[in-house]
Image 1: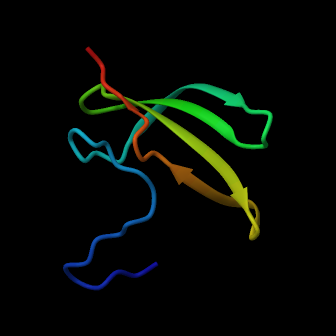
Image 2 (image 1 turned 90 degrees about the horizontal axis):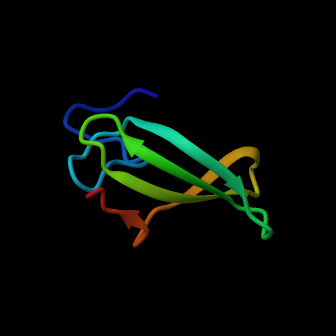
Image 3 (image 1 turned 90 degrees about the vertical axis):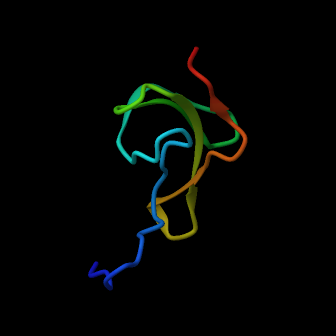
Length: 75
């Protein structure tokens, strides 16, 4: 997708600590309600986050990521 100059692509997640958008997935677990829980680690600063993903009405490729309030601080 072509972006205009000076715009930021808001798709995906970014690290709450450093803003990096690159993560390693360390654990994936399907939940009973159909969502998937993933534990991820930022490639740049090592911050651990937890995401809950669910397929949307657009089909199996549509994924909704909710990371609000579930960041796990790495000590």
